[in-house]
Image 1 (cartoon, helix red, strand yellow):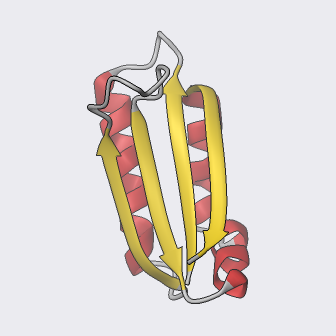
Image 2 (cartoon, rainbow, N blue to C red):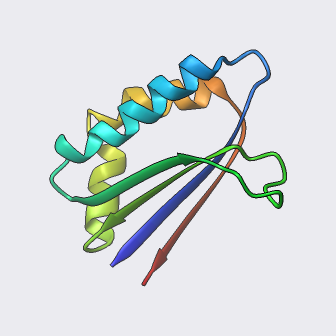
Image 3 (cartoon, rainbow, N blue to C red):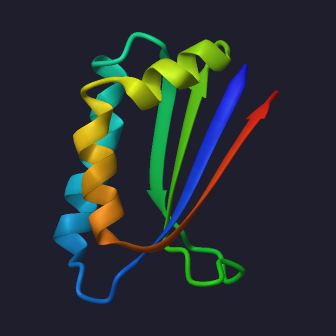
Length: 96
Protein backbone atom coordinates (compact mmCIF):
# COMPACT_ATOMS: atom_id res chain seq x y z
CA UNK A 1 0.00 0.00 0.00
CA UNK A 2 1.18 3.52 -0.80
CA UNK A 3 0.44 6.33 1.65
CA UNK A 4 0.52 9.98 0.54
CA UNK A 5 0.53 12.63 3.27
CA UNK A 6 0.25 16.38 2.70
CA UNK A 7 0.52 18.98 5.46
CA UNK A 8 -0.56 22.57 4.92
CA UNK A 9 0.15 25.95 6.45
CA UNK A 10 -2.17 28.49 4.82
CA UNK A 11 -1.50 32.11 3.96
CA UNK A 12 -2.90 34.55 6.53
CA UNK A 13 -5.44 35.96 4.05
CA UNK A 14 -7.08 32.56 3.43
CA UNK A 15 -10.42 32.16 5.23
CA UNK A 16 -11.70 29.13 7.11
CA UNK A 17 -14.49 28.76 4.55
CA UNK A 18 -11.92 28.60 1.72
CA UNK A 19 -9.99 25.94 3.63
CA UNK A 20 -13.18 23.97 4.36
CA UNK A 21 -14.14 24.12 0.68
CA UNK A 22 -10.79 22.84 -0.56
CA UNK A 23 -10.79 20.04 2.03
CA UNK A 24 -14.25 18.91 0.85
CA UNK A 25 -13.05 19.06 -2.76
CA UNK A 26 -10.05 16.90 -1.88
CA UNK A 27 -12.22 14.39 -0.03
CA UNK A 28 -14.58 14.19 -3.02
CA UNK A 29 -11.72 13.02 -5.24
CA UNK A 30 -12.21 9.52 -3.83
CA UNK A 31 -15.40 9.11 -5.85
CA UNK A 32 -13.78 10.53 -8.98
CA UNK A 33 -10.45 8.69 -9.11
CA UNK A 34 -10.68 4.89 -9.16
CA UNK A 35 -7.12 4.35 -7.90
CA UNK A 36 -7.84 5.99 -4.53
CA UNK A 37 -8.49 3.56 -1.69
CA UNK A 38 -9.19 6.18 0.97
CA UNK A 39 -8.89 9.93 1.55
CA UNK A 40 -8.80 11.43 5.03
CA UNK A 41 -8.66 15.18 5.67
CA UNK A 42 -8.63 17.08 8.90
CA UNK A 43 -7.68 20.05 10.99
CA UNK A 44 -4.66 19.58 13.22
CA UNK A 45 -4.99 19.81 17.00
CA UNK A 46 -1.44 18.85 17.98
CA UNK A 47 0.76 21.44 19.64
CA UNK A 48 3.73 19.96 17.73
CA UNK A 49 2.49 21.11 14.32
CA UNK A 50 5.04 23.85 13.57
CA UNK A 51 2.15 25.92 12.20
CA UNK A 52 0.75 23.28 9.84
CA UNK A 53 -2.99 23.39 10.40
CA UNK A 54 -4.44 20.76 8.05
CA UNK A 55 -3.48 17.32 6.78
CA UNK A 56 -4.56 15.06 3.95
CA UNK A 57 -3.83 11.32 3.85
CA UNK A 58 -4.54 9.35 0.68
CA UNK A 59 -3.92 5.63 0.20
CA UNK A 60 -3.36 3.65 -2.99
CA UNK A 61 -2.70 0.03 -3.91
CA UNK A 62 0.58 0.89 -5.65
CA UNK A 63 2.74 3.70 -6.99
CA UNK A 64 0.90 3.64 -10.30
CA UNK A 65 -2.24 4.63 -8.38
CA UNK A 66 -0.43 7.60 -6.82
CA UNK A 67 0.87 8.67 -10.22
CA UNK A 68 -2.62 8.36 -11.72
CA UNK A 69 -4.04 10.47 -8.86
CA UNK A 70 -1.53 13.25 -9.42
CA UNK A 71 -2.12 13.28 -13.18
CA UNK A 72 -5.92 12.93 -13.02
CA UNK A 73 -7.89 15.85 -14.52
CA UNK A 74 -10.07 16.07 -11.38
CA UNK A 75 -6.99 16.48 -9.16
CA UNK A 76 -5.21 19.20 -11.13
CA UNK A 77 -7.56 22.15 -10.47
CA UNK A 78 -7.75 21.31 -6.77
CA UNK A 79 -3.96 21.10 -6.55
CA UNK A 80 -3.75 24.48 -8.27
CA UNK A 81 -6.26 25.93 -5.78
CA UNK A 82 -4.24 24.55 -2.85
CA UNK A 83 -1.02 25.99 -4.32
CA UNK A 84 -2.63 29.43 -4.46
CA UNK A 85 -3.74 29.20 -0.82
CA UNK A 86 -0.75 27.69 0.94
CA UNK A 87 2.09 29.47 2.62
CA UNK A 88 3.99 26.20 2.89
CA UNK A 89 3.29 22.52 2.50
CA UNK A 90 5.04 19.22 3.04
CA UNK A 91 4.37 16.09 1.04
CA UNK A 92 5.44 12.61 2.09
CA UNK A 93 4.91 9.36 0.19
CA UNK A 94 5.83 5.93 1.50
CA UNK A 95 5.08 2.26 1.09
CA UNK A 96 3.43 0.54 4.02
